[in-house]
Image 1 (cartoon, rainbow, N blue to C red):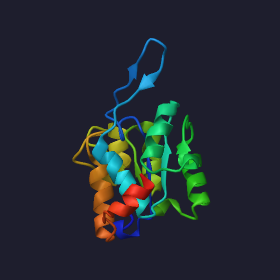
Image 2: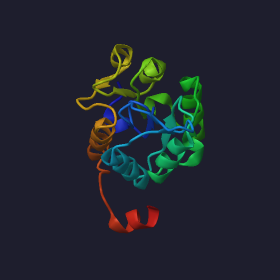
Image 3: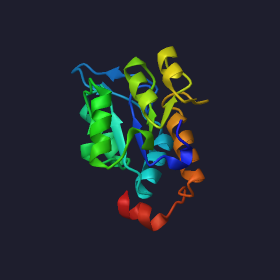
Image 4: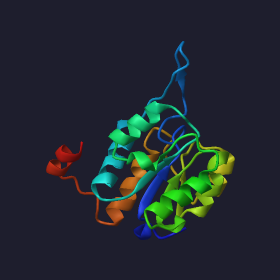
Length: 174
């Protein structure tokens, strides 16, 4: 595991990480998820402090893109329908002049295991699968969609002296 002081970027799966894994489906087949506002605020803090962030998810819903963009991610850093998360991670790193060791990745299931191992710090929610927990450097005390992202991102930013809220910047960006 990379020293948390060396983390330069964050990347996330969605279902089971930024959400609790539950998916609602309406009669038209539209999928809906619930997100934790405190996790979303951590993404905004990271955006305000210049951390590149990516979503790398098998989910394909436009609602995922809409939610994470309002939390500070750039549209080009949202990888929907990912079937090869390592390829998407490498693309994100290349575009931001990063190495996988510079990234803290959050994943909760088997498709995330390779990325959890490859990144500088792999984080799995407390309710992740055994494969994801085994691959992760950190198994959070918090479940997906219930503070896992917030706690670990805040920890990194506090260690790096970047957990600073500036009202003017927040109003300008969000």
